[in-house]
Image (cartoon, rainbow over all chains, first blue to last red):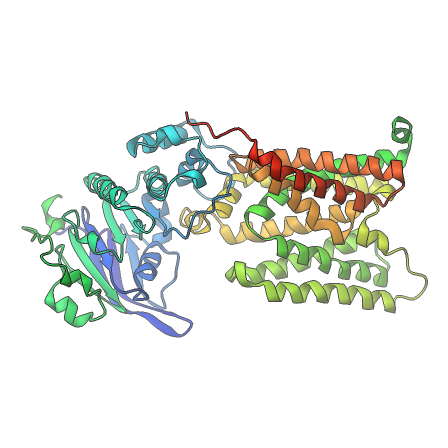
Length: 258
Length: 272
């Protein structure tokens, strides 16, 4: 029996100020997948991710997460937004940032519960950042901050983790560590990652979607001739840097683990 | 100074300054971290339209300011919600329009006009008991609202998109924040006048921000600084017979510039 997809995008259309951004997107992401969304700048990668989690409303079509409209399952989704440069001055500690992942609605709670604080501690220990819990978030390096944002997503114990350009401000060493962390998380969590970085096609990725107004999905960590032909905007460097790590999955990833 | 405290109007002044310090510390913290100083200035100045309206219709001025600045704050919130960081032109227009409306309505009001300077620069030495009760009510309202939605406001201020994903009613909280800025403006007009509102909302939180690791501590430091500035300012204005609102702001300004060298000798962050 075929498993139901974690993310199901049906005939999705979206335009911004009258300019079409996404046209007729169909996409299914199955449990256990580790998908990279790649594509040119302005191709709609981030828009697609925001539509998936319900931050944007589609003009046409539908998105279902875990079988429901995105807003209904917000608590089961981990989201790591694109970093737009840290606000160094904002007075908030690492621990409080992670606790934010336990928010449910806006009101009624002055403090987080003991249980929430324990989960936050576990999430910080998992990413090796517990020692930094009382440091102001603005004082961390880009890579450390990005890991804290992953902890904030993990603290909600998500079934699905969506990350938007998480490598933007992370150095090479940090990137390697970060991918190792994601690979580890992928044991239990479905991951979707937006990136414009060729390194994303490392061996951790299980599938690729190339977004350039339309979406070309490939169920293996590689770019096909077909994709290049259809999405001719896709970054040329991806194919010009010699042999890519190529791994053909033996079966549909959704069918392996039921 | 001791005999000054025997005077009822001085007692009222200190109570009003104390209440306004609380509200300014709490709301000013959000104003500073959300970078909405200009919006707050717009609400404060447009409130002049409320003064004109109150005199024109023969209502109580403080109710006029309250109603009008609440209205302006809702309009500002609606305009700035979509493009929070780039709505400055429209804010500037509303800022000027509100003031112009106030001036014209006062022109049209027959009879002798009261001392409008007191609304521009404050009238802390003439706060009636009824206004103190109103201020107490507004302070309680602001503190309780922020307390109830504290985590929501923190997440809205730090990462609005993430808050939205987590089901925080970000739009509601944004409008609520704007309305509370209007409430604090009403209170501060009594103390330092609408021209100087911005100083009390921004100077203490700006100083406090660098010493705080949470918005709550930032609020508490801001409240303490506000109390310090307003009390010292009141004392100076009494001793040297100076305008109270301007004296308070001068004290705050001195504190602002002292805080820069003081910041260099702060203790280093603690890793534990």
